[in-house]
Amino acid sequence: MALLFMVMLVTAAGNTAMQSVMPSIGTELGVSDWWISLAYTWSALLWVVCAPLWARRSDRRGRKAMMALGLIGFSLSFTLCGIVIYAGLKGAVGVGLTIALFAAARSLYGAFGSAAPPAVQAYVASRTPRSERTKALALVASSFGLGTVIGPAIAPLLVFGAGGHGLAGPFFAFAVFGIVVLVALRLGLPDDTPVYAARGQIAPAPFSASAGTRVEAFDAAEEAGEQGAIPDLHWRDRRLRPWLVAGLLGGHAQAALLGLAGFFVLDRLGLRADPGAGAGPVGTVLMAGAGATLLAQWGLIPLLRLGPRTSVLAGMATALVGTAMLAFAYDLHSISLGFAIASLGFGLYRPGFTAGASLAVTRAEQGQVGGIVASLNGAAYVVAPALGVWLYNHHEAIGFAVIGGLCAAVLGWGWRALAADSRMEADLPGGDVPGQLG
Image 1 (cartoon, one colour):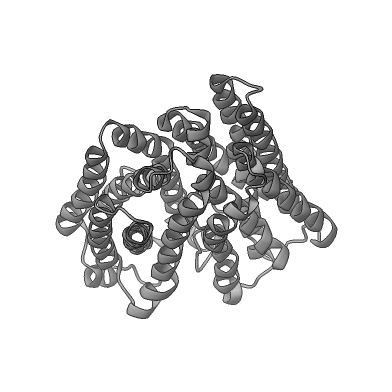
Image 2 (cartoon, rainbow, N blue to C red; image 1 turned 120 degrees about the vertical axis):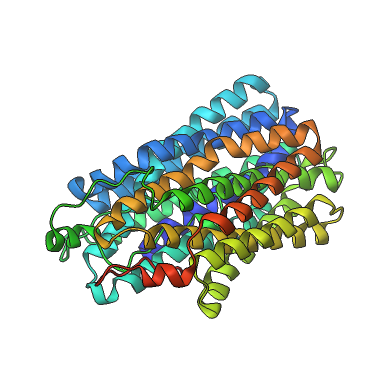
């Protein structure tokens, strides 16, 4: 379990550490914020496309092999990204070519790094009886969220050297971390000897603390044998439509806010002239947001036992307040507080949307709805971060107004269209076990 935990942890931490330094790197290179955001969100598209393919392949080709492939893709991507960034910061490569090569190197992470999470989940599930599976999967899934806190925290410590080229340090450091975990995995993890039927679930890219893997209380592949053929579930299904609309709007609001957060910190703290000093404050803000998200998901939701509709509406209201506070923040403390409150809201909202979609369908359809939700979560990070930065660069007020408008839209839509928590519990088919909100 320690090895599997580290596989998930290092990939999530590396990704969020990258987000801590990329705004400073873009400023040092003198390139538009929009191009920087577009370059590293490109991998999100490949993740959305490739993750389902790797999830299916892990069931046929072996889970340990797919974990190794994911770590190789992660380490190679970060190594090449570090080389490209270092060369660009030293002036050895032109700015335009630097961004193009960086995007190409990042594509390795989206294409091959997505092989590891579903393989880890399937490996755990195939060696764990159903009575213990949820607990075991929750432990592994928590590593994704923990990584999003650790990454921004240690990224400033990995900026080696006094010059701007030291900003490439986190890429090289996490490439080494990935190789160490890969060697430990190869030497210490037993080969695939499945005891129980299980298959990998699609995991969204680790762009934030709420991008952790989804934990099921049962395995849809096992239920298929008990209930016959699984009906084909489409995203236009009337039962899912209200929840997917809420997920699409809220997901884009969260992705846009995360995309512009680093650039916003540099602007409000006046660090554009000294981008090398920006990694620390940006990391502090991202760490505050990740911690608040985990507080919502690991603390408030289980403690308060919030239902899906309540969680979505309360989360969006909180995110709207946090976004408004952030828009008027001018020092590190107030920026961190505003971003943390917004992240707390998104941390409440996303599990509510996920559980609501799960509760809307039958037990046999849980595997399909999990894939739809994961794809929807990942799709938000394909366009929204770059679009949010583009609007923000036109005028700060426009960027925050659009994010706040999306939050308000989810509130209005959710109030009218989402089924009440008590009604969803009453409508559950006999014998069904819904996906758990916490």
